[in-house]
Image (cartoon, rainbow, N blue to C red; front, side):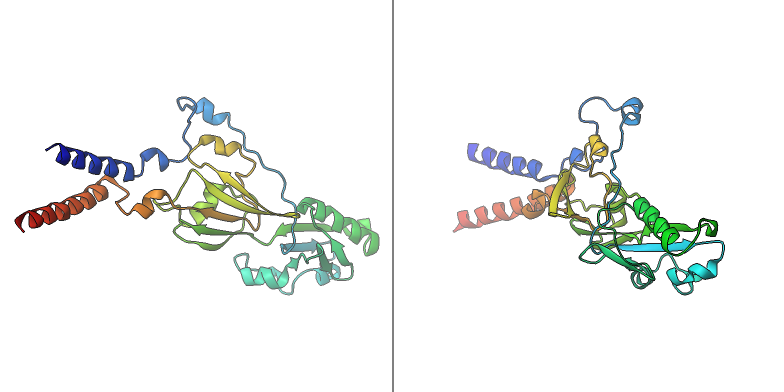
Length: 266
């Protein structure tokens, strides 16, 4: 009798431990004190300006009072540019080469590695005014990344390369665009593999903690890789919810009981 009680107790403990706790699925929990509006409003997002890397694609447009004089700097058919076309951005954009340079018509090679888009914009305006135009030409240059490109892998519903045409994208927007994290994904240790001039670095974010909004890695950058690893319950195979676990345990207990009865009859 005692052995049966111990057996059922062991099975129950396994079942309870195999379920995914609710707190592991909820984003932005206040783990330090009771959540209130004041605590939420006092959170400050940290974001450093993005600095251009090798293989980035820049979308550069030059405007002036006499647009014909600056047409050489702009793609053919610019007025019909489809902002959603990744192919158009690839062929018409300016790719940063392995030396950190872009090639601009007439101006030649210009090093932009480590610059922000605002700094590149001012650099090009000054170059054009020095070499090609006068102040009266009213040169106006815009520089943008040709889409914020990143990769999602692991426990997300739509892994692969994602592109968003936005200047600022936080980790929740990036994951939502990839179809959200699956129920078997570890929200407490989401990895961001980021490119730096000296190589790659891995940063970890706990998306269940509201303080993630204070992290310097809360906003993703171009060429980031986001990896969501699976939780342990996925490999156990006992079920992720209470219903799934109970169903699995009932099946296992039925098989064990049947096996014991058959053995006793022999």
